[in-house]
Picture (spheres, one colour):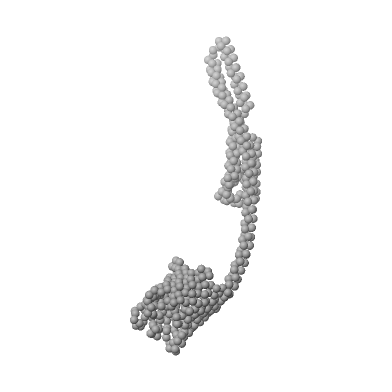
Length: 468
């Protein structure tokens, strides 16, 4: 049993050391009293760095060690109370044996006295009364002897229990030491694993940096190659058929310059920094246009041009772009212009458009007013709109003439789509018109015009890409 006090002494010494070093349990903390009590009992101990680390999670090994220490502390307290009770009653084994010997002698003396009195015929009432008292005292002594014997048996049983507790304590202490050893091994393995993970993470970060640099180099190279490809001239040979019959031609692109030479149309354009030049010849209408723009997001554009029949015109645009404007995704344009036709002012026009995305669909609506000279140059008002979804687009227009041309209104409905299957490009269009052709009034070539054509129409064009 001598090692139990040593264990408590060691726990107390550990508490004094831990208490002096518990820097992270400040005075007045709500758990300070409980922590101090468990440290005093040796159930808890601090870390070697002098901290308690009260916010750290407890694993199952640590919980087992704390519960076992609490069990040993409780056993020691019970044994201490039993020893103290026996010592206060002065019931040591030697004292109990002496009392039993005196009682035995008293029994023998009492029997001899009774026999002598009977032989001499002594029958004194006083002596009998005294003898009765002696007998009562002897009975009490016998009872006390029985209690002492019971206490002796209990003491022996208690000593045996203490011996078993001592042996169990030694066994549990051995298991505790083994458990602490395994816990240290687990903690060491965990520390090694943490170090390996940190090392692996550092290596991964270094690899990621290397891959990032390589990826950046690849992107730079790809960008250079794309620029080089764009700088190379590209061409396309195309053929098709439409309302005017079969057609064909050649389209060339070099940087931002494009030329299209075909039996159906002739087009040329050049895009510069903030300006563009364009020429178009389509269905007997020709125009050359120069445009210059200011700002981004909300643009201000000016345009001047010339067309067949000594027609000179100027147009001003205010345009809200889908990207970069005040309202992302929203498109709006307001155009106003006028011209000179053989020195006479005329052909003024006003056009307004607005569009916004509706889910994956872009919807655009517009209104146009055109003041023509009359005859083939009919003044008109028109409503038009487009619905675009990916490479497909639907277009509808409705126009009302402002002079008598034999009809009150005209309309046009058309669907268009473009597909690419390198090196081929395919575009198709189909629609129905009732006396109307064109797309708006801002462009002289594409301006709305009334026609006698009525019915369905279509157009198919196939292009083959040619690289130089």
